[in-house]
Length: 231
Image 1 (cartoon, rainbow, N blue to C red):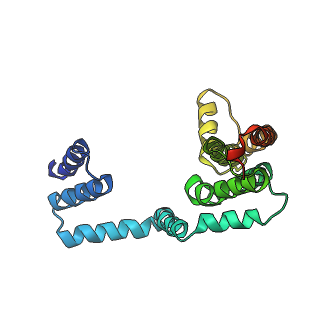
Image 2 (tube, helix red, strand yellow; image 1 turned 180 degrees about the horizontal axis):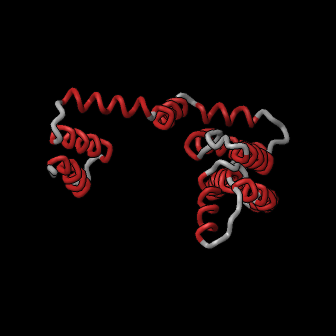
Image 3 (cartoon, helix red, strand yellow; image 1 turned 90 degrees about the vertical axis):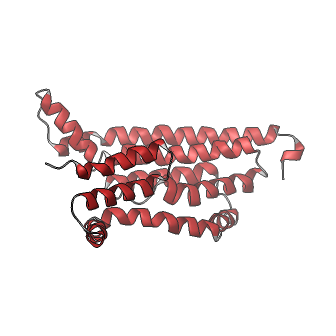
């Protein structure tokens, strides 16, 4: 057995040690391994294309990120802020609680792609929550802005984490089933999913309460802020 194809691993290790671009390193390592195994350059590139096509439903997720970046540069966050500023009665609590409900409900039926820190939270939900806070409370100090962003990120994580376990065909359910079977406990995935519902409901109630308390704290903080920090 020839060890020459392992030269690609050496390229990656040396590249990481030199702090080079990881994506370029992995591609260079794959090319080196392909050439060392007897393929010509065209064959290596063809293998890249075939692998991308065979896994296009996984790879297409990464193509969304440049689109989100382009939309942000074109003013996506500003448009989201303007829209919320025109809605009377919108608050940090109402926006984040509604998103929490939507995210958890979508995850419960297997729609995990309807959300995410990079695709939804940063470009849309967090700016909308900030705009709602400014519309009701005036200009916010940077500390409160960071707190709003943290609460928005928490709503994403809580909704996704506790919602996905309600969906029967999810990796976490299968992991729990396998662990219990190793310890002599036989359960069906559907049973695990059903008994995840009370946990999901409690998680929603607890985090919604935390968001409400946070919204009240924002109101109190705005009232005690110096005049120069208000609109």
